[in-house]
Image (cartoon, rainbow, N blue to C red; front, side):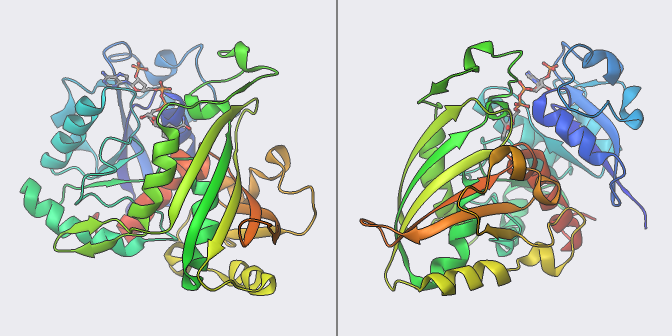
Length: 359
Ligand SMILES: NC(=O)c1ccc[n+]([C@@H]2O[C@H](COP(=O)([O-])OP(=O)(O)OC[C@H]3O[C@@H](n4cnc5c(N)ncnc54)[C@H](OP(=O)(O)O)[C@@H]3O)[C@@H](O)[C@H]2O)c1
């Protein structure tokens, strides 16, 4: 099988570096181009990330000598030399929107980690195990942009990757009210303990914009395709508090849920055990075999022990029990830079290829 040629816009950043590591030995994808700001442009990748390589494994050899392009001036050249790009840049929202649309207009599919297009009505925001059918909106998006193969598809915010997967298969019982508190790792801010020493032995009760995303994005994931746009769901009602904790990687969530028709605890456990999404049906290369893992031990999941489950792509759940105010409460965990960022986008790109949206 011919491998897809892949570019990474923002390839020098924290999420970009994760993309680079995930391209190493990928069975379908081959990293051939990297773009970033003018600060990195023109340098070989190894030089552009010297002193700021944040991954635990060394820079993959295939990336070392790739000359970094300038995302401002080399965009057409980038679009012409790859089959699609991943995008994870730290720029103003308007600039990100324009950058991603320009790439799509150059007929280059964009799989994005950025939030700029998450609420563009004809841009699908997809977790492959939850709402793969939203990709059908791409036909309307292509019509609007006047393109044949260009497209923009985005993944959702990292905070909700832990609790929405656990709630999703329970929607058949009529999810009514959700309360969630997230305990989020510092890598979600693009930081390590070396670059953010103030976080050692600390908790910060504020992450800008995160609570709004945590409350609104699930409703788009659970929305319906109508007349060429995704119309967000109107329920359940969700309230969220998002807290930064002294953890390197891994977002945990404490979840409380009420249903129209309360299921038995055994039913919930059975549903989680048996749940498979499109990613598992298609056996996509980055899909976890078991999407939702339930731990019976009271002290699991634990961030350090369980975040890397199934290469950081599975969701861990534990402590399901009845609550005095809601029907149930439980705890969830996911790896924020793997499932929650680059890994989730790689899985989405695999879905787009498998379903024929990227040729
Ligand atoms: N960290 C996470 O867990 C996480 C999770 C989900 C989503 N995200 C999102 O992913 C995006 C990137 O996050 P990050 O943590 O990787 O940020 P980061 O480490 O600060 O990296 C930012 C990247 O953007 C590039 N960049 C900055 N200004 C640019 C410009 N004007 N033109 C082109 N490239 C430019 C940088 O290039 P230079 O190196 O040349 O400056 C770098 O490659 C953000 O939108 C973030 O919200 C992050």
